[in-house]
Image 1: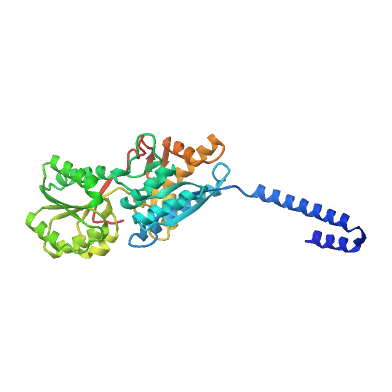
Image 2: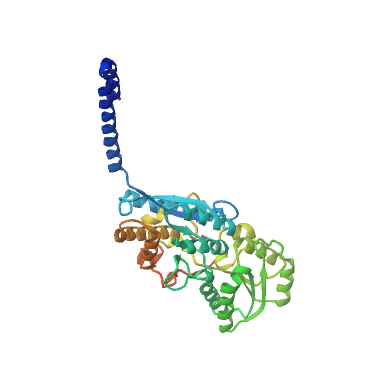
Length: 388
């Protein structure tokens, strides 16, 4: 500010030669502006963005809040280490409610921002299917944690990448477990419309191959709460095991009503049942329950320091997707760095190409993708009783 006060005094004391003084003042201001601008450029990196589309409201809001801390942690670590190929990274986090219409709208919002180079999301199959078409048409790299078999891209062409095994893989593993380990011989399959084809069919084929019989197969509705008619069908079929291919919201109510109706069949759930809210909804009925998990528990992380940092990173306790969200973010950041080094600047197309060559040693294990964007050697486990 002394410079400007001095200039003002010069203008006042040399009024007869005001044009000279004015020109001198303008030159001085311009010099100071350029000097300050140069300092700012030297201290500030250009910005690129990555997106997170997740449920931060509604029944599944705990999923969004269990992953956003891990995503932010990965970005913060990268920025503190010098950024990505000379760029600083910012996060755009949008609430999709795990609902298809919201997910599609959030995808369009991500796409319209030219600074967003890749997106992580799709924590529900129906929501992911709605969003994927938007991302695919725009060529936006999208790393999803959805499991529907319908999400697979054509070989070598799509910008969609999957961190989890497909539903059909989970169904086959559960069918083998039911007919083999559990020795179930009469099995009922209860599924929602989205899970029936991949998860339900995969389970049925493996269970039949293992010597079991499918004595009942019925579809339920999303958000269905009254299962009285289904209970009557189950009682007549008299299964010794029930495979539930759906979400915890419906599974909890189904299990509670089944036990109240005196149905004692062993309960085995698909990946959607890998949710602590099953216990919250079903209460004491959720005992000796088996479920398949495509996630990766925090307790499985080998690095004790990383395990500790991830446990403190979230706004909610770590869930099945926390570790995978951390890995997914780092995969995007690595792909961005490689794309910038090859092309000199970030582009979505270059990031897609870089993601296809991913070889990443993540907290959830080695990560690479096949020509359809599916993760090779995806985690897939079956648990009982202990919910993470």
